[in-house]
Image (cartoon, rainbow, N blue to C red; front, side, top):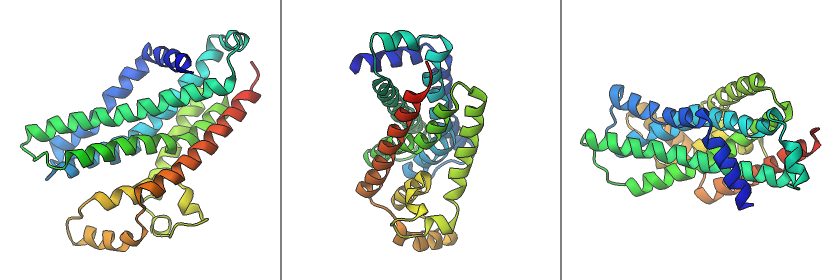
Length: 257
């Protein structure tokens, strides 16, 4: 399994897409630093998690997944891998591991850039350990949030255009849903609000922010009864990730070589 992960990583490392993806991790930290300077470290880090993560990282993960899953078809190497033999379920697991490593590395790259920008602006770095932990967890959670879209990408089979369109609409829909009180302000249970990944992550993340201003304070007071603890959000997203990976394996196994 470790060899498969290494092979998938080295294949991805040769792609320009990987370098371009990591370049975007600096976009929002630099943009926010130039136009919307933060008042404290938590404020600076919100750009890494909420803008870079939810608006850029999720579509990046989908695009990289499309590259990883379609490459064997494009180069006609999947037949050789199956003849070795390499089981398709192991290939899917190796690609999933590469994706989660990229997701965490992307978030941590943004964290490092934001730390440098905060230090350059004279912002106190107090609480950096908590911000590091939140950023790491966000990287893991966003990987899980991207998996439902990756199912559609694998099902589409070799269509890069459809993958781009799907990633765009999925990202916009998920981000828009976290702005809805009807989705965000519902108790946990067997309802749709519990199983939509991005709003669930926001309900976990918001509890670590300090609201400023009357409107934000009022919003947080209304939302606070619906905050989700770290163990609970981990269990929900881990269960969803397991189901999604199982579905990806099933779709991938049924595709013709």
